[in-house]
Image (cartoon, rainbow, N blue to C red; front, side, top):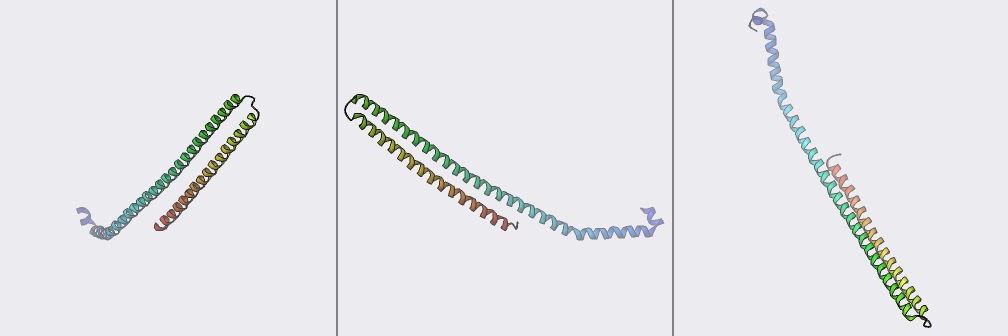
Length: 167
């Protein structure tokens, strides 16, 4: 560099001046770069926070859906169990009637009496079954309404969430 300055003093002065200008420009640009980096960091943190909130909302919704599914499954199992108990009770009553019929033998009006009792038992069982089915359908309808309300709430929450983030 010393030779350059002796032989070509104007080049040395020009390069020194250019270096000086670059240094001043860098010093001036540095606060802008820092501000931009800070903004980018803040944006990144906001996006991470938004994603985390959305994940929490999704997880909460899935848990609520699972609870409703479990309730529905419990209702179904309870209904099936009640139906089995009813059928078992019906079979036992029919067996008792069969036993009574054998004991009565050929008594006058005995068979007709037993058949009337059988028919009453059958009608009771059918009526109870219809009531159970109706009750189960009502419970299913209630669960369906709860599920629909949950989905509407989730959609509203997502819309509000999106509006809050400007997206």
